[in-house]
Image: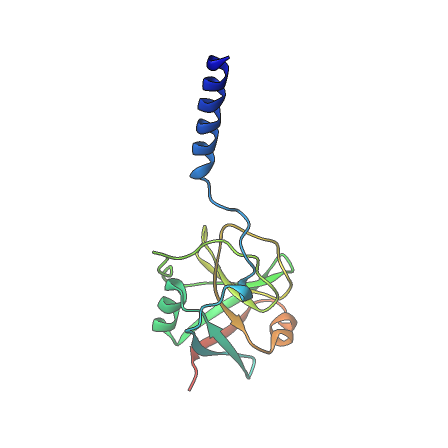
Length: 155
């Protein structure tokens, strides 16, 4: 009987230690995890100045330090507009994984591209949340084909 309890105890300990290194795949929605310090920017699209708030995160801070940047966007899967940077953003120390909502700006880690979601999306462990489009989502969504936009620091 003692051997059975000993074996059960060892099995339980091994099972717990195997789970301890796993990451939680349930990322919180982007808007619920925004940090207190943010960076203000403006996205210039088709003559419209759209306010953007960038998060206090390593990738967002790197992007802010590069502003202004002009990017060529295209539609991707009828859910987001994406653009590629000349050089990948710094991802060291960056939280990865989020559940973006319409208006959220994220970086897709495998490709390094910027995404502006214009519909709510599912939880994705590869997305880096970097900011939010505060207004003008209808202007982003209405863009057909490729379009150019410039992201710059707010005055």
